Image 1: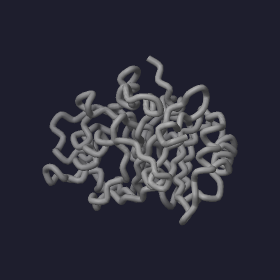
Image 2: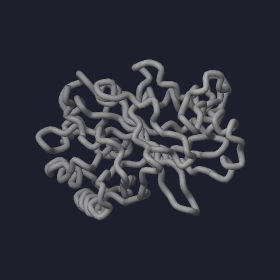
Image 3: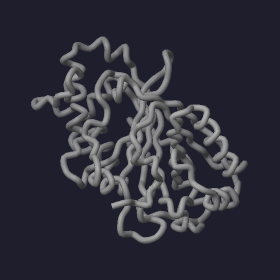
Length: 289
């Protein structure tokens, strides 16, 4: 089954990408920019997501979209108004695409974060562990990621959760190999899951054991010598799936905090609705365009 989704969502993780978060300027009317965005052709290498603050400004709403939770102290909420993922393999093309979309949106929007990310060692996190091992594939990925049977403007849309994580690789490298493996719940060499891993192991905190818990992750490493980490991206037909994982990581159900927190910390967090594409344009009818 083919979904009218933004095509970049299902593309393989690119060698390089850029993630951009926008805020709304005080008292700015975003309507003209959004109308221009809906009228122009959609770049198939870009993903566009709308945050709850933007929809509130224009008096619109999407059932299932909300702001990033503010009651999880380990995971700060830095909810933006609009989010872009630019997955052009050429960084010059990503630069041009980003400037073009920003120009379309106009002066009512301002960039608050712009992160360049990359693929590391054929799909590994900077910690050396393989990323996205439990990602669904094929039809299971489509079912996990995209909204279905909810009508025009929603069908083929998706919700996305994004966070930027800062790693302390020196802290991780000070651990023994067994301690590192226990934190993740998999062996760094070979990626084999550890059957008797502790309850704090990341794989146990974020277990995708059933289709009802599946999310489609498209995370990528970012940074340089001074600061580096993971730009986490997870698409889902419901934000509840991701939030259940997040609350388990925070130990809200059993008091057990995810072992990953021993060498990494979240510094941003936002939720967005990514509308579908119809006839080569973003279908923004669900938000009034």
